[in-house]
Image 1: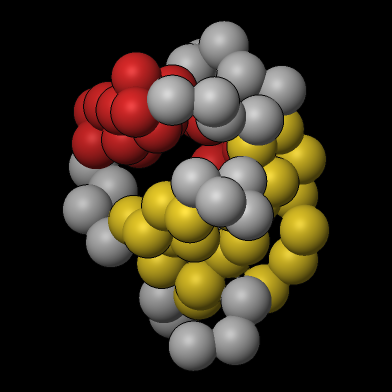
Image 2: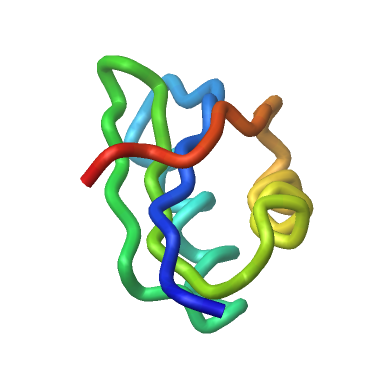
Length: 72
């Protein structure tokens, strides 16, 4: 499966929140992560499915939802 850039809505209020999201994704082996705190968006370029990524992000303990495939 090709790398796809997924977009997620994640409730983050501080750097600690974004750090938690980054840590759980890094544990899954994801390195291509972009976080936009102002828009409360997380972008992940990955070969994993959106469902796998969403379940991983939920492990950070933050309310989140999948938005869709993001433009580059």
